[in-house]
Image (cartoon, rainbow, N blue to C red):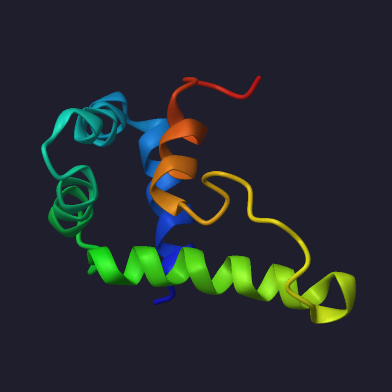
Amino acid sequence: MEVVTMLDELHSMALQNPEIRNQFLETEKAKEPITEFCQVCQKLGYELYEMDLICAGEEFHAAMKRSTNGGGENSPMLTGQDDFYELFLASIRKKSYE
């Protein structure tokens, strides 16, 4: 299963289950937040590891850059643009999207 697919499923779980949501949000307080995040994912049955998460973000960002501006490297990277961990947490901080 691809990282983005796993994160989508985990996102849905987090929004439906406050306990799971809180487990993910608590990872921010850990000494190694991404490692802790991946451990929560693994406990939920998703084989997601630190390098998978990091590489997926970088690959996604690289694909975006290739698809704009003629594929050149002249588009600057925004802070956190390739950080799937931070994007995931930001998306579950609100309990609902109503």
